[in-house]
Image (tube, rainbow, N blue to C red; front, side):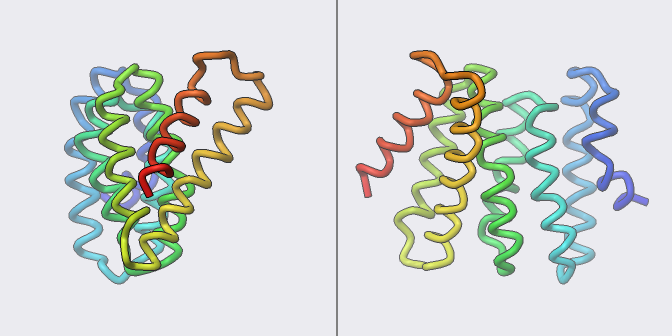
Amino acid sequence: MAAGVLENLPQILQVLSQEQRDKYIELFIQAQNKVEKANKSQWRQREQFAIQISELCALISADKLNQFYVPKFYDLCLDDVATVRETTATMATASIVKNFLSSNNLFFLDNFINEMTFFQSSRTFTHRQTFICMIKSLILDFCSIETSEKAAPGSDLNLIDSIVIKYFEKG
């Protein structure tokens, strides 16, 4: 039963108020952890959860996202299965960044980007490959915003540009 509820979590959260979402999100993440522990060999469930993270970003507060889902995001980015890592990085990175930007939480955003640099500077090929998927997510998502909205000076796209350039210059 828990797996069925978790499969439909984004749809369930859509009908709840923001206050209710924040109240129950910890219960949902605990249930997700139990299902994941019981089914460690089920990489498709982890991949599905990675996809859900991107959907949940628009539904939960930056505080709850940072507290519960950003750590899970990075766990999934370190998964043993390449499909899970790639799906997580490609599907969720830009959604997390947009959540932090829309809530004007630059502290969370800066921490998130700093954690990304672990993947950039890692000696492990799979970590660097995951970093490329993260950057791909940002570029594809924010470039589509720019082409559809013609980003104005000071827009989210310009902020992302400066963040990406800042961290590429470090490497």
